[in-house]
Image (cartoon, rainbow, N blue to C red; front, top):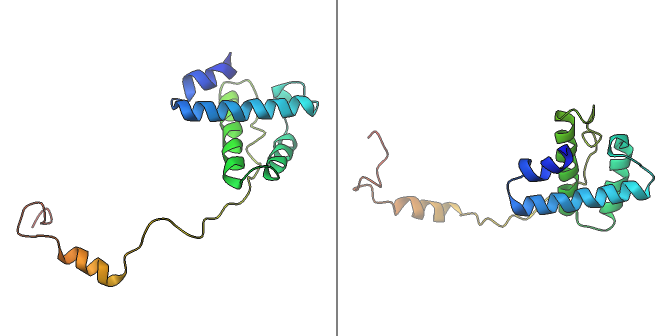
Length: 130
């Protein structure tokens, strides 16, 4: 019951709930195929092996999301005293670095032009307290 409460009561966003459920379902199916008979028998090596397999099939952000889902689920089970420890806690996900941001950066002349365009003669343009 505590397992179901994780999805029903703990995760409010329906998209997150769906993604976390899918990740948990995939992980538990993988565990069953690997011979892990119960969720309380899951060890860090199982989580790490599943994550490693995922890196060969999916992009790093997808694998990181699945690891976050499993970590969150096991945290919930630990807090509910279903399990003594979170086996996903020590597992590291794949590294993902974004080297090219999408946020445009103003050069100094554009920043100066923007600041000079503020009308300080009105209340909205003045700093509070002046």
